Length: 143
Image 1 (cartoon, rainbow, N blue to C red):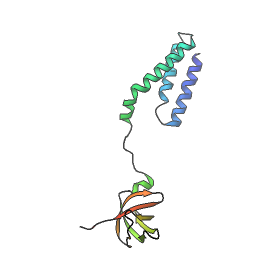
Image 2 (cartoon, one colour; image 1 turned 180 degrees about the vertical axis):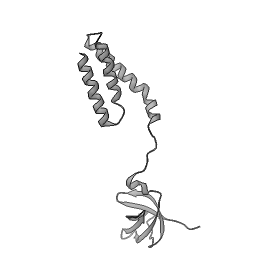
Image 3 (tube, rainbow, N blue to C red; image 1 turned 30 degrees about the horizontal axis):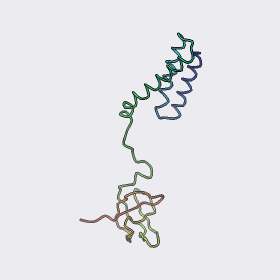
Image 4 (cartoon, one colour; image 1 turned 90 degrees about the vertical axis):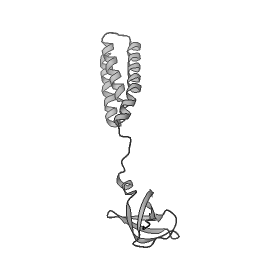
């Protein structure tokens, strides 16, 4: 029976590698402990019980530790990295016609005003968020 537990441990490890969730790993450890138990006890019910108990205990007791180790703050990547940046209006933003473009970091984006106001060309704006393929902008106020 130890071969079955060893195969299960390997399968759980492969699933963990594919999954990246650091959740299935504990079932692999539980299967390895059940494999060791199977060398001394032939009863499959006891082996399965050991597997379930060890896996569950490891899962619950290591969750706080894993949560501390994993980053909580998400890093804005790709398109969402432009949020909060200053852009320049390249084509006037007209809320009635639904047209407008801004340029930020060498990229041209379709844009619309956060307050549904007209924003003229060459105005500096702040990108508040992304809505689909358009950025939502607000004109910068000069002090």
